[in-house]
Image 1 (cartoon, helix red, strand yellow):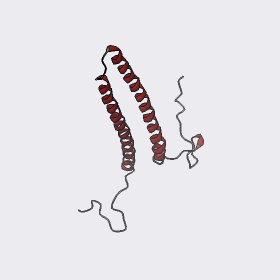
Image 2 (cartoon, one colour):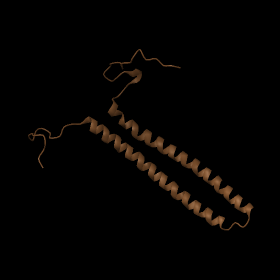
Image 3 (cartoon, one colour):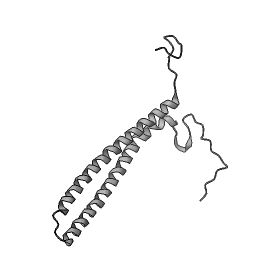
Image 4 (cartoon, helix red, strand yellow):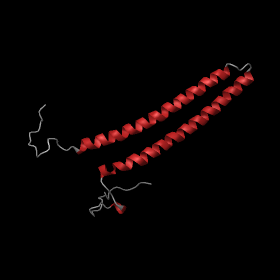
Length: 134
């Protein structure tokens, strides 16, 4: 296949594309997030399905309304506990991924120092006509 950009051996035949690099980096981080959530979610669904199966087995052995209602209430309490634990795990996964991956993308936006100064010493430009409304 021929290169679309003619050149000799000393010049690169590919052009730099910072927008494509930005998109690919963002997509790679997004894929990592989705994979982590899918693994976490699939594990939780499998756990809940096993517990639901055990609940059905237990319900099959209930012989009166009182034991049936106690069994169902226990199941509901267990579901509430499982949902709370899963929410905590998802939150922890979000913070872990967010703190581990997103700061690494800072090179895409440029570095800032305290006080809004950029490393070259120029102050960040702000619009004086914008005001905060309380």
